[in-house]
Length: 353
Image (cartoon, rainbow, N blue to C red):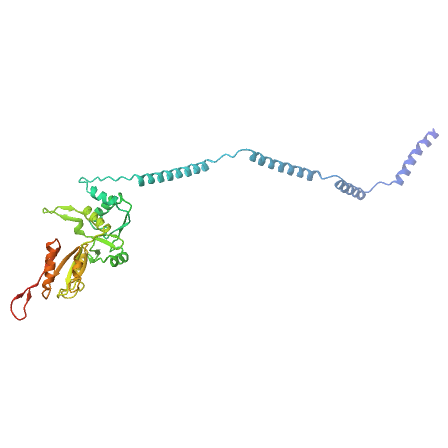
């Protein structure tokens, strides 16, 4: 019995010696070991949380790339608003092409209808022949204001004229509304101005038809006339056609006033001067000249001339009177405006020639 107890005590003693050699670790050492192992594990193996975050971001980037590639691969679908804009642009372009085509057709095949009961603006064949024969530009300047009763009729008639030829350049100038423009034309064409009772500025000439330096005046009296009953008789077409024929023609009617025997001067506006008469005759579309009977070749000026002998103060020489008489009998035109020539010595009338 004693021997068995001795044997069991030996292992216990060995265990105590081993524990003395290796004493138990304190809490501090355990914590240090835990920290060192934790740091070693962090250095040696990646963090699970950071790895998961990185993996999630990579997956998100791949997901974001995939729709772009799919979007680029799929065909684009036009929005309804964009389609509406396209249809609008096509419609506008089509309308523009149609308008241009219509303008070309109208310019080539223009036809004008006169719906007035009397065919007031239907042009006669002589007028059509005159218009179709124009081969150079002609200016037609209208000096009627918009308030003038004749303005509408003139506009309609000139529209009918313009439908037959492209050679007419038509302008409308209101003296009261466009005084600067009227002043320039007044100087160019020697036009008189008047002032109405209302204080408006008007032109004495209604229309001027001009080709270069040659021009023709159309007055208000040329446009309309009145018959015995007081009814209006339009003469507008006749007046315009006559004006056109005169400016395109080479001949002009000349009126020659004699001088050299005490006749009043046609260039003087003082006293008994006839400058006003000259102005009126010119605006009746005649050329006014002076025929000086004292010149040696005065008789050569009689060709195509309408001679006016106006109030000579002394008797005309007999040979000149005889020449004028022969010229008149042969078909010349002669107008005598004679005042009685009184003798200073005797109470009697002296012969004029």
